[in-house]
Image (cartoon, rainbow, N blue to C red; front, side, top):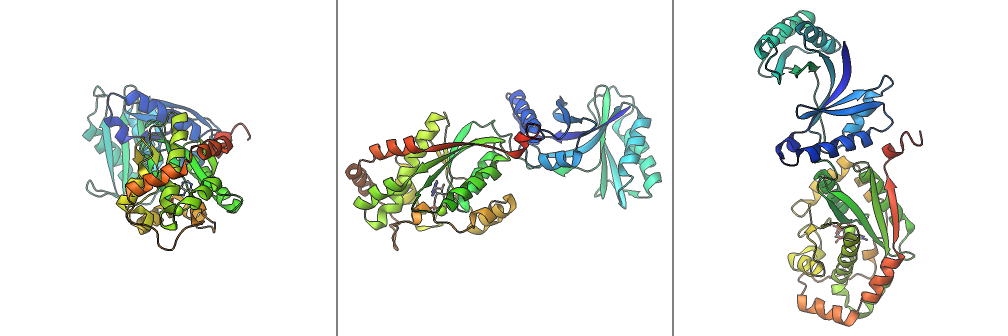
Length: 396
Ligand code: ATP
Ligand code: MG
């Protein structure tokens, strides 16, 4: 009797003792969503890990690929579930390494069930002797090319060979909700990714100045949200018209302060969306010192209209580091498509880098943007975005 399955390890969650069940349930649910339609029979807990069991028609390679996008997984491995018997362990180990080439190996046994009659070292020795004979490789306990893992539980055992690194982080949803201000630039999608990785359920808000800016910017933004949603399965995107607010600001505010006033308006509106969804924070792609609008006095002036905390996961990164991450995630190619940012409209050659709070508040008084805010929110378009895996099974 044996069964092919996939073993999931989730280090960081294991540390959170009080909330462990909650974290595990989220992870389990996210694994099921990410692998919808791929033949997963079930996901069950097993001694601080998880075990994915498979139907006969399962597509294991696609399941393994999908697991790369489930935050909370430290590593995973195709595994074989067997009965608790040394002969079965030997057979499984020999069969699992059969297709592989390696010059050195070790067996690493862990016993969760201490009543198993053989001690770990004895299991290592016996299974090792069989693998050595079958493969001709030598035992190397220090830095082997291949490690066969054996884990012994209550009434069964698992054998697996290759551990695949997962994406790490925490399961999306365990860290509540936050609203990301998403431009179609390079930074904010990466900021969103970093917070998804910390378990935050991200809601997306994009401000556009159509018909002044081309629809391409909205399309790119939607593509970015679709990509990020593959980590969270479903999400909301708010497209908020910004042109009239911009025009109101340009009619009162001198060029050097316009970007600061635009951003303040964006923060205010994003916070309204956050309140509506009972989200607890805003997220931006801001980075200290990267562009003129992002000096500390300016960040302070921009932050002033909101009460929710503003997470800036990229604030300490170099641009090059952000670009590399964007490439890895896959957002870079979308972000560099030509587009007009709404904030590239009506902006100065020499922006203010040391915003005065008094000046900003004076502009606010003169502007009276509340009616514009109300209208922008009324005209906002809310889209529900679903990742492809969520369609699987429903749409084939
Ligand atoms: P990005 O690459 O994310 O556009 P940036 O380095 O170009 O960032 P800014 O253009 O100053 O910096 O924007 C700062 C932050 O303000 C962005 O990271 C984003 O969070 C938010 N933001 C800017 N423009 C928009 C927009 N049109 N819609 C929503 N959020 C925006
Ligand atoms: Mg930008």
